[in-house]
Structures are given as C-alpha cells and as structure tokens.
Length: 326
Ligand SMILES: [Mn+2]
Image (tube, rainbow, N blue to C red; front, side, top):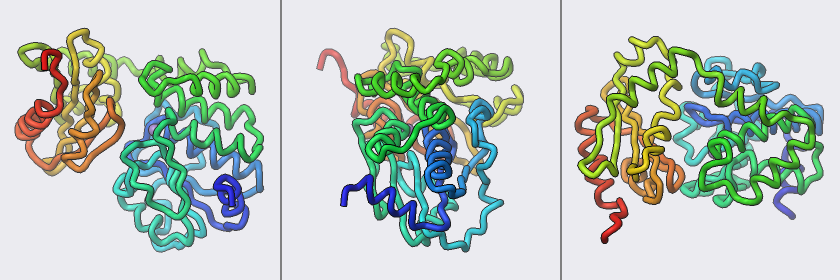
C-alpha cells in the first residue's frame, strides 16, 4: 500500500491518537503538530491529543490550536494509545518521559527530516532533503488531497519559516518556495507571520542576548567563537529558558566565523550546547557527545562543568573544522 494511504488509514482506524513534539520545542515541531491535529479533526472529526514536553515558547502562542496541547502532567503515562505520532523528533530520547507512551502505543508514526533520524517506529516518513517536518507533512497532505485551510496553512508556514531561519538557511531550496507560495494562496499573511516569529521578542530577551554576545570568546583566527551562559545570567535578566535561541546564529553571522556555539549551564552539572557552522559538518561533532541535528545546525547535552565542556568541544571541533589551507 502506498505509504501516504497507510498514514490515512491508520489515522482513520485509530480511536486514541497522540501527537508528540520534541523537548525544547521549536516552530517546526509545534507547527507540524498543530497542523496535523487540526487536519485530523477536519478530515475525520477526531480529536487527536497534542503533547508538549517543555514550556511553550511564548512566541508560538499564536498557533491557532496550540491552546489544546497538553503537558506531561496532564497525561496518564500508563495509557496505551492506538496511535502515537512523533513529529520532528530526531531520536526517541528527545521525547524524554513520553518515550513510554510511544513505546506502549499499538502503532507509531515517525515524521521527521533530520538526517540523523534512525527510522524508529512502525510507519516512517523521514525526508532529510525536506527543509522541515512541516514540509514533509505538507507533501503527505497533498498526496492525500486533504484540504489545507487558513489555520493549517498558518501552522505549516510557521514550521517552514522558522526551520529555514526565515528562508535563509541552506535547507531553503526551490521546493520550499513552491510550498510557501501554495500556502500563501490560502490567505495567510507572510509579513504578519514573520513579525510574530521574529519581531515579537521582549526587551529583556534582546538585552540578555546582547550581553551573551558581548562576552563571546574567539579563537586566535576568529574562526571559532563561543559564549557561555550561566544560570545566574538567566536569573539576572529574568528571561525564560528559550531566551538563548538565536545567539549561535548571531555569532555565526560574523564574517570570520566558521563555527559558533553556545554553552548553556543547566541543572546538576549538565550543559546544553547549541552549535552552528558555515561549512563544517557539526552534526558529526555533536553526535560524539550523544547529540545530533543537521549538518550546519546541531546540538548536544554534556554532563560536565562548563569549562570542561568547552575543552572537550574545542578538541572535537579542531578535528572536524575545515581549514582553508589544508
Ligand atoms: Mn525541524
């Protein structure tokens, strides 16, 4: 059976459906989740549940049905769903405590675009060539002829817009513009969605990010740059955990930068790393520490002190970085 048709049939035949977004959610996982939930309702009059695993970044408040999403404490973890769909989830550990729900489900779907995705699940839609999980879902909807209304288009466009960094990243190919054009024809307002995603930051966040950038450390040749964000910094500026989003991109925007990374101090001696590069495959670097992601945008979590983490990362980066002369 054609895969998309199988997708439709399994949704049609499942009573209890749960859609899960990844921990520390971004616009792609949230937009894709909301688009799918909305489409399932409109197609079959079925209320699929949505699950968010960490605090919702305020910026995504505008997604039409995001208010219906549940948090882990609102869900019975012993429940056996007929169908669990993971969206934009590169590996199952990105589901943290919700992994149990995924593993217990009668049927599972893996919808993603990360190159590092290992094809877990019963039905797999992983397209590393797609810009975003939103684009993967859009192609499924098209194949099935499901109607994409204004709300669904808003969610899908948000997923694509944010995962391409506003149509700027290397994953912005011809198909991205084709899909964006078709979504725009439903009546969405690209300027308004851009403003919601990129020009709705609080004053505190912008000042906090400026502070983080101002204390960046550069390698001798300025090719590698990083900044360390301590818990006390986040407390001092009274910002949320997602306030660090975009700092690595700002550092990468420097002409001389090849690799930029942000080390964020977490609880119990762990650090969260967000890494960006211009040409070096840093998914490879992050995978050495159990993380992953895309070639030029990846991340990992390392259990060690910040200073130790920096040393370890610099060692691995120096093995991987492309030197112009070599
Ligand atoms: Mn994504």
